[in-house]
Image (cartoon, rainbow, N blue to C red; front, side):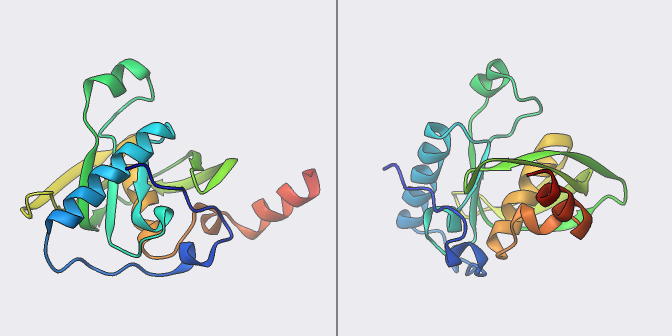
Length: 166
């Protein structure tokens, strides 16, 4: 079932999500609903708070490029209780957008590589090591679970510059 995307400044986007104690049928269905919503909105990642639920669940397209051909070849995945267990010291600045802040794109500095630990839909613990765009998506979505938005990741001077330009 398609969910409505919560838009900024809704206060739920600033709250910390709760860890899931077990992977139930309801959680599996919720994950599939999140995937459907993300796909319908043409996103590449979505966190549960963005659809109004304070659950530590994200969905991510495991893609390396933003091309439609690449997207068509892969299946979005559900990650329950995801956490970053390792980040590279090397960082990359690239543009990000967010379904909860439509039409806003900002250059954000993120770790180039991350290692993620989570549960899959079968309740199995998994580890993923990724870099580039997928690493950026994981960092962005896990931030949502902690009430952090990508607008929080820009400097005071970037915010000031944007105000002066508008």
